[in-house]
Each structure stands twice: as C-alpha cells, then as structure tokens.
Length: 63
Image (cartoon, rainbow, N blue to C red; front, side, top):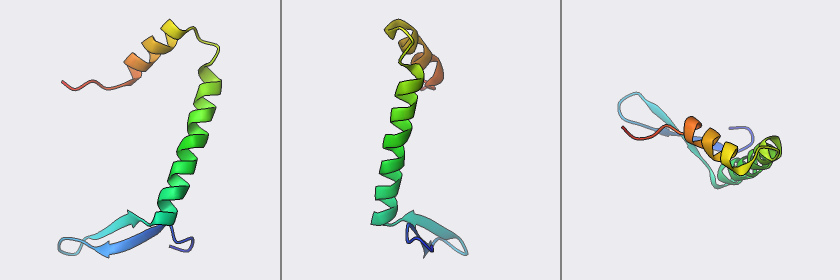
C-alpha cells in the first residue's frame, strides 16, 4: 500500500489476495528479530528447564 509493503492481486472469483512485497518481507523479518530479542530478555531469568516447559506448553502439538 502506501509504504509499498503489501500488494493486492486478483484471487479466485471476486477475492482479492494480499501478498508481501520484497520490501514488506524485509520489514517483517526485522520485526521478527525485534520480537525475538524482546522475548529473550523477558524470559532470560527463567532457568533452562522452566523455559523448556513453558515452550512445550505454548506450542500446539500435532494431534
């Protein structure tokens, strides 16, 4: 759109699909890095075993 991060493309029927542009992909990747750093700081005080338990409980396992 205005920043050039997303483009609209015709989809099936009347549907309009939204796709990230290469610039949008870079912004998303940068955002993931920031989020990873914040999460690491938030949970660094937890012992390794507690972090592993938390991760297991948050991740949805395939049934």
